[in-house]
Image (cartoon, rainbow, N blue to C red; front, side, top):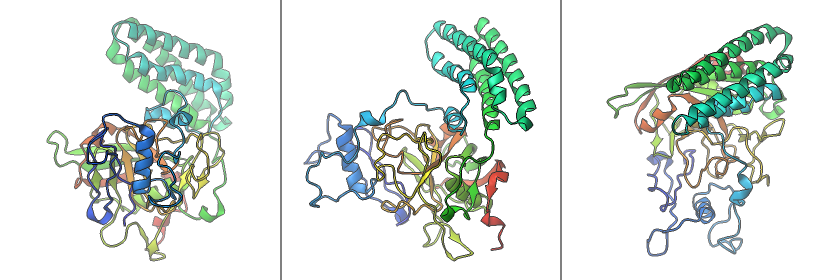
Length: 426
């Protein structure tokens, strides 16, 4: 059976998901009353447990009828309250900034009020601009007071560039303040995006080398030691207003070096070029299952499917954990560095009961459901996230089965790939 994210849904919350294509077919689990009636009320935990047991989303869960299954309400999943830790960050750019391996409070104090502008703009009427003005002034004060500490966080070779970026940031903040004074609400978000790009570049320049050692058993695999950006061009057939759509994706090798390195290596092999989308059900978009009996990438040097281990970076840890889900490790309260929070979160698909079976099949999460609310979902810690779609992500909802990936190209960060197998003959 092809590696796949298990199809699952609660019939009381959204329509059932269609099954995967034939070579990766899974049963769709439903939470329904006996006799076929749909529930009128919804229990997140009961539904999640039922789905997990039905489709094996939770590895090693006892099957129905097993002596271990004494009570249907035993907490196979931890309480939802344990998993929630404040308002979730859903913006892919913000998630990537906070995932950087840096510890510089001064730059974060500039970043936070700039990101808060997004929420300020959700306020109705002129009060929105009043709130934006407070955000801008807070960021300006933080930059003025913390400039020295920010520059101290940069290596000497990057200090000059950092000073230039901070100068641009200061000028941009003044410009944004004038935009607010002129009550030009439409100009706020584009300027905010520009300023956050300056902030993000400064933060990336604070990373001094790769922060940890890859375990020896994976150290000879293709590894992305840093970040890379790819453009995925998709031919969308059924939307007359969209023919070719380019999705920009940032791959995070700081937090998933083995997973991201495997993908970049496949991209350079043109593995995905010309491949069809194989699942698009409103929950995820999935591809990567090649033609023929193989369910993943066949490494020409071995003649076997190349697989990568499950790789999860936990917030607060210095290196990822490998080969086991966070649930299997008993780390129910742990938050992942790369959570399934953003529309267009990118992760590896794998076989249901084999944590280390991922090869080439990837998926993008499209929306929240009762099973996948931000900061409290049953995917975090079970599937390896390694990037986010940062441009045109909304158009993922228009992608359908049979749409063609015309090309995926690395546009930056290829120099961060080590041990590339695509350069080896064959």
